[in-house]
Amino acid sequence: MAIQTILVINKSGGLVYQRDFSASAPRLSSNEYLVLAGTLQGVVAIASQITPKSLQITRKTGSKSGSDANHSSQLVPYVGALGSSAVPAQELGSFMGPDYFNEAFTSWNTTGLKHVTTDQNSLFLYQTLTGVKFVAVSSQSATSTMAVSIAENLLRKAYCLYVDYVMKNPFYEPEMPIKCELFDKRLGELVAQL
Image (cartoon, one colour):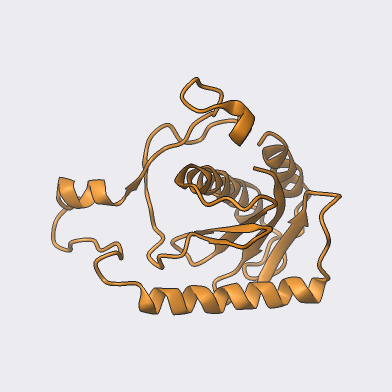
């Protein structure tokens, strides 16, 4: 899976970061990226309204950690490095970056929208608890559950980089465009390893 672009959209739907990784891919103008970010914000809002309550993640109040059955239904499987014999490396590529996660994690995406597939591209969406959305645009039309898990794992790692290099930066103002060279560099390294 080749990542063409990564976008970061703030909780109000504004585009705060955009980076193209593929030199051969057709480039959009900055105005088209702003329209894309606003459109995705609207689609996520609509999807959250039409997602059935049975599919939305709900936590029981009053208990410390909830029941085990409720907790296991919220877990998304961990997808580690893909060089194993269970998954052929030729088809999906290899992701050998530093691994921040060693087990399944709780999925916070309550909107029901994780990816959008077209004839030419796939958009993968990862929404954080704070409402910040990370979007990866892939050059392949990927519809498998494994591709979605790989992309979600990549976007979670991009979120960790965002927290480490952007949110901990004393000169960064929230909701403003991200201008952080270390974040740019580390994100480029992360995508290059995919």
